[in-house]
Image (tube, rainbow, N blue to C red; front, side, top):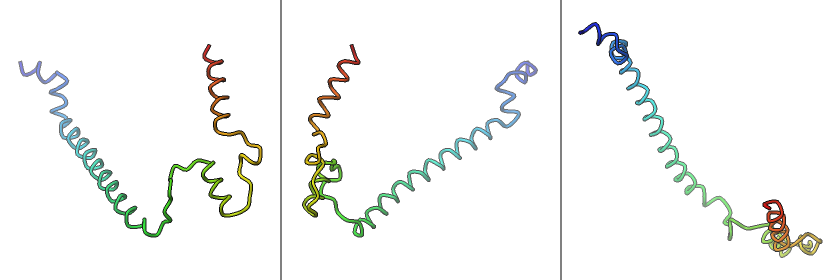
Length: 104
């Protein structure tokens, strides 16, 4: 009976110390995940520490129109809309029309 158990795949893994190799691999993965989570938490602290040295933004998702408006208030350059560029509503309408035509 022991001959049959020795020939099975599980006994070969146990005899060849496959369990030790598997545990070592799991420990390596676990340790690397811990290091990644520590690094991410330290990045949050680092960004909070250097935020005093970075300029504040009123709206960090400012689009091109907001940037153009702020540039116009600082200098007398014309905005993109005044220079003949299409408005955002026109671009959205063209995109919708193309999508409707291509999805038919």
